[in-house]
Length: 228
Ligand code: ATP
Image (cartoon, rainbow, N blue to C red; front, side, top):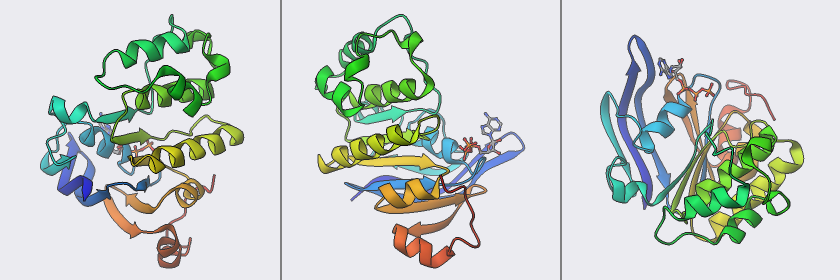
């Protein structure tokens, strides 16, 4: 089963074409990496999957439905590239607030542990570092107990130790049966975390396969990304 299906999707912003004839699937229960350089169209693809914008043409289905439907959105957890966090609330208060928006949320303690935020639970969001803010954004994305997580460049601004802890948290979420799509610039991140990698370049799909198949296919020669 596929949790995301995009078929022949075009998305233009005025004269700029962000996505061209993009067809892709994200499979249920897998961790999929959407890999591509700056401007490849990753954020545009995620915003279509989140129902935040509509394709110029083509079709986007998420969890079998229209991503703009409330019933679909309730089953999807989103971690955007830039998060507006409630700065005056502590980490624990933010999680409690977001939990109250959902019918069957995780416990706040579970989300704190997953995101490695136990020691920061009493700190106001306004006083968190950049990497800590990313961890809070991640905790807020999972607090609703989503079936599908859509995560846009989660590890930008994180140090190496936080990145490794974050990857472990993703594996834990996957082992609970959740499907995860994350975007990244980093080939290393895609290879180390993902069951399947989708390579986006200039708005279209360049390659799609397991990390091993991808390595064999592109050999690191034709497609060069920063190895993070
Ligand atoms: P990055 O890694 O830098 O976030 P990305 O792969 O997420 O890049 P997008 O942000 O989806 O790429 O952008 C794809 C293309 O669409 C780029 O050429 C970008 O300049 C353009 N674009 C994105 N959003 C807009 C917008 N709101 N208005 C005009 N052009 C846009």
